[in-house]
Amino acid sequence: MSELVDNLSPEIIAIIAQYLESKDFFNLRLSTLYLRDSTAALFLKLYFRTRTHMLSRHSLMNLLDISHHPIFGPSIQSVVITTNHLTPDGLSDEPYLPGRTERNVSPPINKESYREYYIQQNSFRQSGLDTTYLSEILANAVHCRTLALADHDQPWGAAFLQRETGVYPTSSMEKEYSKIYIQQVIHVIIAAATASGALIETFELDAGLGRAMSPSVLRFPELHRIQLPWAGTLTSLQLLMGPDYDENPLVWSKPLVDFILLFPRLEVLDLYFDTRLQRTGFQALSRALNLPNLRVLRIGGFDCLSNDLILLFDKHQNTLREIVLNDVNISTKPEGSWQKFVTMLGDQLQITRKRRGVYSVGPPMAMELMLSHDFIEELARELEVDQGEHRHTADLNNGIVDISVDISTKCREPSAYAVSWGLRRDIVVERV
Image 1 (cartoon, rainbow, N blue to C red):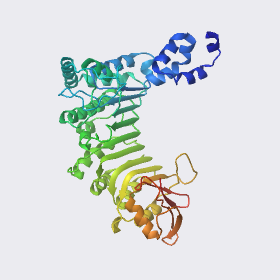
Image 2 (tube, rainbow, N blue to C red):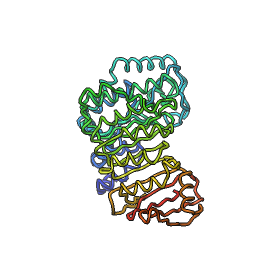
Image 3 (cartoon, rainbow, N blue to C red):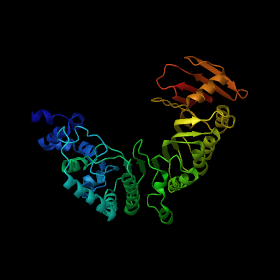
Image 4 (cartoon, rainbow, N blue to C red):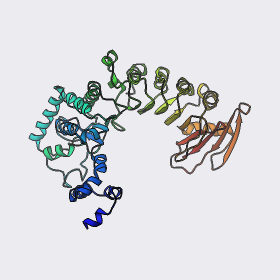
């Protein structure tokens, strides 16, 4: 058996190993030195390239030990901090998910142990040790280029806390304590990234849908007075925001824009609003946002006028190569009609068609839009076409813009449409 295995190339062994369960994979690596060496790269990729941890003492100490290791530490490329935490009442807001522990039944709640770890969580945060640990981790992980806050099912250390307390740490943000705690976690991450001097290239704040944070949590006046080490290296930023409906757009948009503008080399901006943004909110954002190196813009979750979109596109037309609008409602009022949007877009931008799995050669812009049902109905009326599986081409503005329309009624998502600009400035509107 050993001779048969030795005849397999390291590449074949690695392909086979990637389909094994963790326990079987570990046993395979312990079998022979040849198997261990053949799966070394896969082992580092699966268990060390991306590390997902809670902001707890137990979890960060584990990551700190890994970061000091001469092989494991340099293998870390992404550090993800999750929103999981213990709440004051000692009860998780989330249902128990089988498989998170060794047993398929939730252990009884250990109030004494829970209280101990809850106090430890607060003291760890209040003492600043969480910032110290994370700063050292990022400084040690010399190849780490991605830092994120995310909602994740199984961060390292969460199952340990469940075994100790009987409660799986929640990621809910419904309670006031949780909201404040997550805001503090964000500040810890920002402070640690700054203090460590890490060359972060990608930064993500995504607490999950229904848990998005108000842009006010990004208010860091002290950051404008210092030189951020990662301001010159960050090229990709992903934010999931959820401003309160009663918040003044002029108030919450300032800390959001100020934070984004901290990174002048930003090339990719992915900005989505969980609580739907009204027109005045997007207007304030589009007027203030100006990134000289922006190449990819992905935004969604808002209502707007075509003027505001065009303004945002126009300010970045020399650098933009891809635009993705998801769940966007473009007003059909006269001051923001689809006709004006199409005409202005055609006058100012050259866009090449880009479809899933298909790449075309042409002008340097790719665009994908998700438009509202009302927008498409208005488009169909203006072009005098009925909804159905057929194509119609209209010539607008004396032949300057050609529009091809394919409006199908057989979709499960009647409000979802994709729009692409072709090599001849053809706009193809079709339901996806």
